[in-house]
Every structure is written in structure tokens, then in C-alpha cells.
Image 1 (cartoon, rainbow, N blue to C red):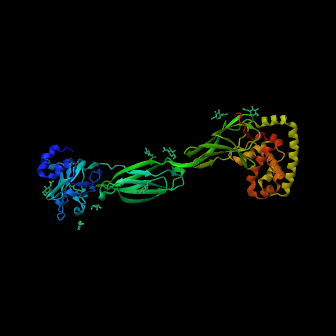
Image 2: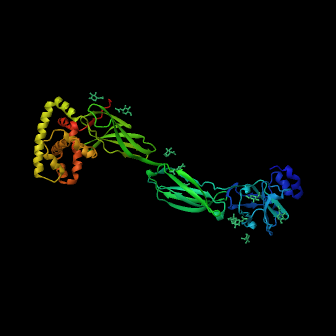
Image 3: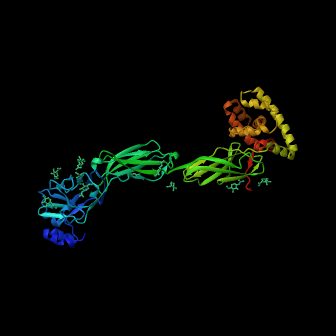
Length: 476
Ligand SMILES: *[C@@H]1O[C@H](CO)[C@@H](O)[C@H](O)[C@H]1NC(C)=O
Ligand SMILES: *[C@@H]1O[C@H](CO)[C@@H](O)[C@H](O)[C@H]1NC(C)=O
Ligand SMILES: *[C@@H]1O[C@H](CO)[C@@H](O)[C@H](O)[C@H]1NC(C)=O
Ligand SMILES: *[C@@H]1O[C@H](CO)[C@@H](O)[C@H](O)[C@H]1NC(C)=O
Ligand SMILES: *[C@@H]1O[C@H](CO)[C@@H](O)[C@H](O)[C@H]1NC(C)=O
Ligand SMILES: *[C@@H]1O[C@H](CO)[C@@H](O)[C@H](O)[C@H]1NC(C)=O
Ligand SMILES: *[C@@H]1O[C@H](CO)[C@@H](O)[C@H](O)[C@H]1NC(C)=O
Ligand SMILES: *[C@@H]1O[C@H](CO)[C@@H](O)[C@H](O)[C@H]1NC(C)=O
Ligand SMILES: *[C@@H]1O[C@H](CO)[C@@H](O)[C@H](O)[C@H]1NC(C)=O
Ligand SMILES: *[C@@H]1O[C@H](CO)[C@@H](O)[C@H](O)[C@H]1NC(C)=O
């Protein structure tokens, strides 16, 4: 502040004013720099003061000092209107009260019925004859507005799925009588804890801490903290919106096939893996499932295959820093089964013939076995259909195991495939297979095994025209 203009006044009235101009304060008031206040509400100014040592002897602690608030400038000479509150006066321009205990140098003051024209800087002064001093250096900036300022939302650290997280919402409480009430809007269940807290500058805030356990469904959902100030007849509200950023392991991992199957043997097919994750998926890994074992066959979001008549099921695994997600097993259906079968048959006529013979024998054996050990499985019916056209059966059975929603194009063949299936199992894993069959519940599992077995058996390939398979050739 410019001293010269008030110098004469200060010199005339008290030496302390002069001293202030030379950089020494006669009074050290402590108060916040700024207070945000609502119209119609009150403002409590946290305040304390201290008297420099060199003036201590002038201060008469036996007498309660007056507290004076000056608006706009510390110098009120010729401007008595700047004195808006004087604790020694019965009537003041501002309705207010020093609530602090002045004997304890607590000058905390409340002004009521605040209006927008209260917005200004305010200086504090004490009068304790003969000691009179204003702190010309320190002022509090009071800013009055009709609407409350937004509460402040803070999150500490990363918000992770399935990990409880706490958020803070804090709203200024400049008027003790009109403290805000904080409420939360969250997409899930939560618990809250509210408290009045004192900030480092002595101002007060209401703090609400909410605790909840986010799931990946909450990613990019809004959460809101609303502060309601009970001022006058209508409440005043302010809110803070925040979009949740929940990190989560890959979800909804699925495989799309391009071109859509059924596909032709010898053509290229793209398997593309999609998944949602936060942060995004860093690696995609492809596995081929064969005989219950999965073998890693590729990495990358897309996996291009040269379709062959043999192969297994495929699974895609997506991974990010939080974990991984697996797709369902996918199985390709091959198109133009008849053509394919014919071609294949002519190419491998001899082998096929032998294989068919062998299969017939095995089927017969199985059929007999089944008749004897009849276990009530649907499979029994299948085996009875042994004579249906070769090949058609397989596709359906394979498909049925993996993708029930697919239309059953080749039901008769399925039966046939079932027969093969049995033979394989019996040849290779008789004890286990027998057990499975006895336990009706295991039927699905048995089918899957069969598919894998068949894929590896060369003679059986001919039967598969119907049953699409993929070869993991990198040439495509
Ligand atoms: C405060 O009020 C007292 C008592 O009326 C008066 O003596 C004093 O001058 C006033 N202070 C100011 C700064 O107006
Ligand atoms: C000063 O007085 C106010 C109001 O009475 C009180 O809330 C505050 O705690 C006091 N400050 C100190 C430092 O005693
Ligand atoms: C103010 O403080 C003084 C001294 O600490 C004490 O005697 C007096 O009772 C207090 N006044 C009030 C109103 O608390
Ligand atoms: C000031 O506010 C109080 C309630 O805080 C009310 O009772 C009083 O009438 C108001 N006074 C004026 C002058 O508006
Ligand atoms: C402040 O504004 C109110 C109306 O909003 C008015 O009644 C009052 O006189 C004004 N006070 C000052 C000091 O300008
Ligand atoms: C919330 O506030 C409490 C008390 O001030 C503090 O201990 C905690 O760290 C805060 N949490 C966040 C997320 O800011
Ligand atoms: C979410 O909050 C943003 C502001 O952060 C807002 O624009 C948007 O409308 C809100 N969406 C919903 C659904 O509430
Ligand atoms: C969300 O969180 C993730 C993981 O912490 C981070 O990589 C990403 O930048 C965040 N997104 C936004 C919009 O803050
Ligand atoms: C698929 O593989 C077969 C045998 O290796 C080959 O003849 C054919 O050209 C391949 N198809 C494509 C599209 O690469
Ligand atoms: C497979 O996907 C890759 C990348 O999307 C694309 O470049 C390629 O043309 C696709 N191939 C087929 C056969 O769809």
C-alpha cells in the first residue's frame, strides 16, 4: 500500500503508522487470503493477532481491546465509511460479531446477511488505548457469489476393478450455520463418512469420503458429489462430476471369423480377436486345442490360416497389465462339403476305402458293445445310425459340441461321426472312455475328445468334408 498519501494522517494520529511505512508491522494479524461466500449466508473469518515485542508494553492486557474491520484499504482517514465494523459500537454497517476471545488474541469474526457488495479486501485493527494498530500488510479477500463453488473431488491412485477405492469430496464451509451437506451419486453401492475439517489456513470444509468397490462395468460411468447449502428458504447446490476410469483385465474376449464361415479348404481365413480392457490389450495369443491340450500357435490380434481339412479348435487369449481374458473355443465350418468330400475321396481313394472298411468294422464292434453296455446316452442312438452317409455326421457333431447355435446342416453324418468317435476312444483310452460313457453327464466332454482324435488320424480325414478345420500355416 502507498503510505505517502496517508502519511500525515498516520503521523498525526499515531507513531505506529509511521513505523509501518518503514517495513515493520505494528500488528500481526493472521487470517486466510481468501474466502468464498454465498449471498444471504454468513462468513466466518478465522483470525488471530499478535503484538510485536516493541509494542508489548503499550498493550494493556487488563482491558479488552476493540476489534475493527476496515474495508478496501487499511487507511480510513477521511473515509470513516471504510470502517464497517467496530466492536465498541452498538450499530455497525455490517451486522457481525467477534466470536473469538480477544483476550486470547482470537479475533475470529462472523458477518451475517452477506450481499454481493461485501466483495472486497478487509483489514483488521485493534484499539486498546493508548495502543492503536492496523495490520496494513495482511488482508482477507472476501468473494461473494450467488451460487456456491463446486466441491472438489479427489481420487488417490489408480481405480482398479474389484479393489475398494476411496474418494474425497470437499466443499467449503465459510459459514458454520450454513454448512453444506454432501451427497454422492454412484453407479454402485457405497458407504460414506462425513466430517468437518479445518484447513491449514483455518478455513473450514466439509469432507465426505466415499468407499466402494468398482467393477469394469463402472468404467467411464459418472460419479457425482453434490453440495447442498441450506441458505434462506431455498437450498443452493453445486456439484462435481467425474468420469470413472476403472482399470480392468480383458473382458468380453471373442473371436470373429472373416470371411464368415463356412469356409473353403485351401482358402485363407482371418481369425480376429476382440476384447475390451483398460489399459488396452497389449498381447493377443492364439492357441489350438487338440485332444484337450492347447498349443500356442500365434500371437497378434489377427491370425490368418490356410484352411485344411484337419485342425482343432482355436482360442484367443488377450492380456494387459491387469490380467487376461480368454475367448470361447471357435471351430470353423467348411463349406461345400460334398465337393470337398468328393475331391478328397478321389485323391485318397485307396486310403479312404481302407479307412472306411476299418471304420465299419470298428463301428460294428462299437455298436455291439453299445448294445450290450447300453447306458442310456443319446450316443447310443447315434451309433445305431451307422449306415448314414459318410462325413455329414461329423460336422454336426463337432459343431454341436462347440456352437450349439449353428444350424445342423448334416445331421445324418453326425451319427456317423459319433461312431468314429467311439472307435477312437476305445482304441486309445478304453478305460477312461468306458467310464465316461457310463456316466451320462460326461457325454459332452467325450465329444470334444473325439473331435481332437479324429483330426490327427489321417485315414479319417476323408470323412470330414463336412467338418471344417483350419491349418495354422503362416503363408497366407
Ligand atoms: C471504534 O469505536 C470507538 C467507540 O465508539 C471509537 O472510540 C473508535 O474511534 C472507533 N474506531 C474507529 C476506527 O472508528
Ligand atoms: C478462535 O475463536 C473461534 C470462534 O470462537 C474458535 O472457533 C477458534 O477455535 C478459536 N481459535 C483459537 C486458536 O483458539
Ligand atoms: C477469554 O479468555 C480469558 C483468558 O484466557 C478467560 O478468562 C475468559 O473467560 C475468556 N472469555 C470467554 C468468553 O471465554
Ligand atoms: C440476517 O439474517 C438473519 C438470519 O441469519 C435474519 O434473521 C435477519 O433478519 C437478517 N437480517 C437482515 C437485515 O436481513
Ligand atoms: C449492498 O447492497 C444491498 C442490496 O444488495 C444494499 O441494500 C446495501 O445498501 C449495499 N451496501 C453497501 C455498503 O453498498
Ligand atoms: C481424503 O482425506 C483424508 C483426510 O484429509 C486423507 O487422509 C485422504 O488421504 C484423502 N484421500 C484422498 C483420496 O484424497
Ligand atoms: C457425465 O458427466 C459429464 C460431465 O463431466 C456430463 O457432460 C455428462 O452428461 C454426464 N453423463 C451422464 C450420463 O450423466
Ligand atoms: C485411464 O486409466 C488408464 C490406466 O491407468 C490410463 O492409461 C488412461 O490414460 C486413463 N484415461 C484417462 C482418460 O484418464
Ligand atoms: C493353402 O495351403 C495349401 C497346401 O499347403 C496350398 O496349396 C495353398 O496354396 C494354400 N492357400 C493359400 C491361399 O495360401
Ligand atoms: C486378415 O486381416 C488382415 C488385417 O486385418 C488383412 O490385412 C487381411 O487382408 C485379412 N485377410 C483376409 C483373408 O481376410
